[in-house]
Image (cartoon, rainbow, N blue to C red; front, top):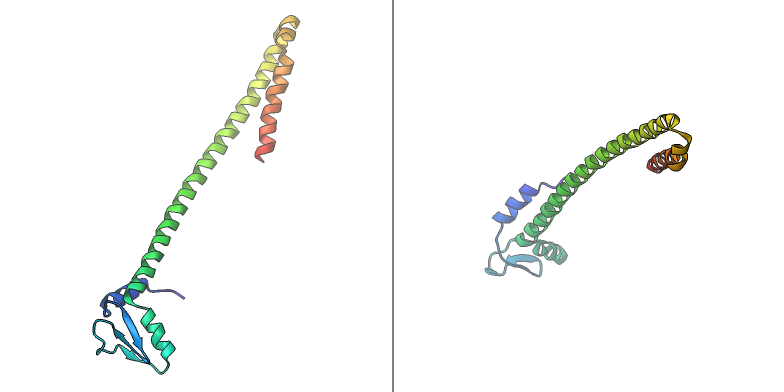
Length: 142
């Protein structure tokens, strides 16, 4: 069911304002109890109509509008965070690729270094650590 909120709001604003009460099977404004707003076959119907005062309808509509505004803001924030997440994922993928390329370059350059230099700086260990770090993050990312 679709609620025509604008129509309800207009009707509530045009209706007799102020508190309503039921007197048996009739509903009347408290300010003018001689003006009956309607007669009902059942007193429960009269109680129901009296409970739906214009102020109640307007308050319910205002609450719906607040919830709709919150939902709109929430969805906009969610979308912004998703875009940021996607951007960060792309940046991480690029950094991971660059890290792997750097480890390959260190390994290649290390092949030209003296054995003493390779052992002193543990080039093989450095390359292994860089490669392991990049691959571990990739595995955790997937």
